[in-house]
Amino acid sequence: MTDFPVDQLPDGESLPETAYQVVHDEAMLDGNARLNLATFVGTWMDDQATRLYVETADKNMVDKDEYPQTAAIETRCWKMIGRLWNAPDPERAIGTSTIGSSEACMLGGLALKRRWQKARRAEGKSTDKPNLVLSSAVQVCWEKFCNYWDVEPRFVPITEEHKVLDGHDLDRYVDENTIGVVAIMGVTYTGMYEPVARISEALDRIQEAKGLDVKIHVDGASGGMIAPFLQPDLEWDFRVDRVVSISTSAHKYGLVFPGLGWVVWRSVDDLPSDLVFDVTYLGGHMPTFALNFSRPGAQVLLQYYLFLRLGRDGYYRVQKATQDIAVYLASEIAKMPAFDLWNDGTDIPVFAWRLTEGYTDKWNLYHLSERLRLKGWLVPAYPMPDDLTDVVVQRIVVRSGLSRSLAESLIQDIREAVDYLDDLESPMPTEGLTSTFTH
Ligand SMILES: *Cc1c(COP(=O)(O)O)cnc(C)c1O
Picture 1: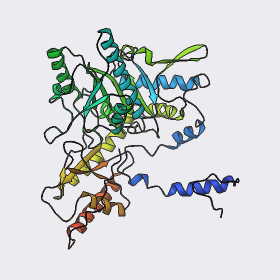
Picture 2 (picture 1 turned 135 degrees about the horizontal axis):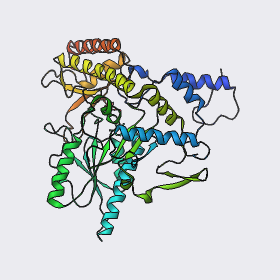
Picture 3 (picture 1 turned 90 degrees about the vertical axis):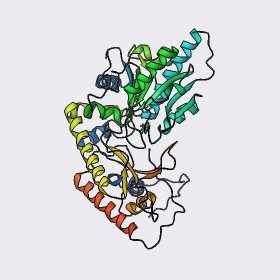
Picture 4 (picture 1 turned 180 degrees about the vertical axis):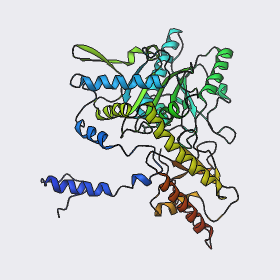
């Protein structure tokens, strides 16, 4: 057996079979994706998709010249998505694929910032202090956006009364330097939707009172591919006039292998043209707006494959089945006296719970998380963000592939773990416990 150095480039060559076996075996040590109820990211596609993936692994998305068909398919995909999100004039909407929601959110945020800068300059006003208003429960990509692009984040804390950003008190955060408000469709911590229409109404009132016209970017990392199928009557998308851009992770409920995301603007007018670069191909021009240059094109083809394969009906069927499992799991957990449900999985198929107040001093949700890990389940426990940092919750993300019978075994394992912990003679030690949050 060849012994490879761990962190040094080996001096010599090895046989492809040998190197393959080493990498293959190491990758096997990663957790079992099926039992990972922490991640939002897809881990399964069917055989045809896997075949397409292998066939197209060499395509570079940025080579519009060499791969004009992949470029055309990318455009078809974001046009389909723009329609799915009810763009009022789909022919005037504009979008792009990205490496994931993080890049898509960066682009949405940059467009908001540039739009605000232009309006301010036109009025001869300062552009020194842009701020972005968002929930304290935003995904880390928004903290990155604010940090990398020098925008002050104005976090609206969540509370027991206001579990999500809901427009309450918004006038205390929004001012003339606000580049926009972020609304999350599927808060990472809990899976709850933020009421985009209500946030928009609060901004209408602010506009009436102060004359400020503040737009919304919807971070639909998960919900962007759930709400159109499972909550078609909920108005969260371009039906809300203030929503100028929406992003999603195709590798979450878009059901594509990682990494792919999408961002679509309501209209070309909402994407300042000086952010867009021209790439020439086939004698024509291709506008691009992206942080990356080269990136894989295969995922875009996989998204197109799935759109053709599933259609609206298929996406509905898959998402509904996933949600049914989430609702089932939530209802079973609600029945256990140890737990107090935070939400029930009827927004995106994600829900969280906390320990019932006064239930026990012997153990907490971190201990339960550890017990479940012994059975292979990854069910993270973590503190909530401001102003609820003293609340610890545990969360399950249901993805396609978690069958009813697996869900039943999970419930059984949770019951057994609780019984075990309840029966302990003395309290579990609380040192060295870490939260296991996966965004
Ligand atoms: C997952 C997630 C992101 C980041 O998405 P990536 O595709 O992993 O970059 C952003 N916002 C929310 C609400 C998310 O759930």
